Length: 107
Image 1: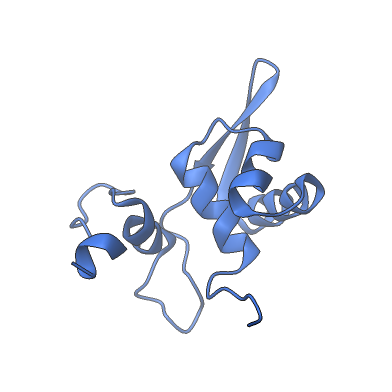
Image 2 (image 1 turned 90 degrees about the vertical axis):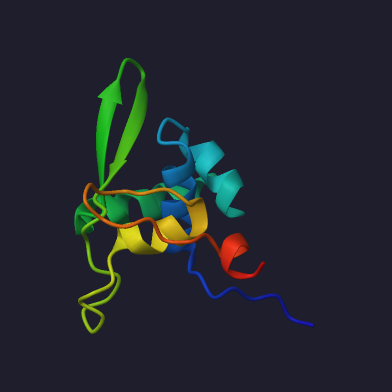
């Protein structure tokens, strides 16, 4: 059977950053199952689009996710924070209700 995923590499990188915002590009790539070079390109894409902000901390980078960015323009109600809450199980913006994780939904 052919391998595939509902979540794109961009989504997997965003989820990896959400789990640990201080990871190196190599660690982000490993977590997403992609090469370091591909991870770097995706981080650049996400930063240019406004989904993440990169801040230099000493010799490393730290990433901050903008949870209010839309998932897609046709789903204006759904935000990045809402999606990440499903996978990570924590709130990404103040004043929003906690969304159940995929594990809690499938219990």
